[in-house]
Length: 131
Image (tube, rainbow, N blue to C red; front, side):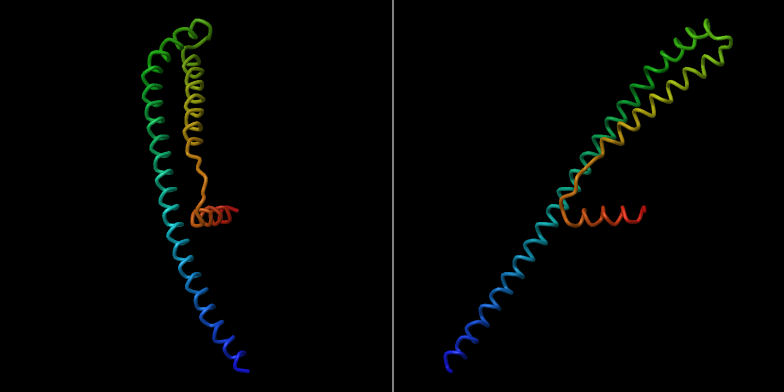
């Protein structure tokens, strides 16, 4: 009978030891999640800055080149279209389509994958809110 009481007292420190390990592992997991979330934010920031830089360079280049091309295109189309205004409208439509394509390309640059629990939860709650 004394052995059975020794067995139960021997199990209690073991359970307490397991809870200490569980708490320590929980803290380590939470710290790792915070570090991962910070890394993901840094990556998102890097991608956003890259996309903004590319968009700015593209926009600047587009504006400089389009000033000359617009005038040349309107002049060239005026000979084949009954009114110069119609030639301008055709060129403006082409430019608007080009700007739309550049904007979509810049938007697609900001694609990132979430690995941390926080960002996966945040992403899933946003998707549920849209439905």
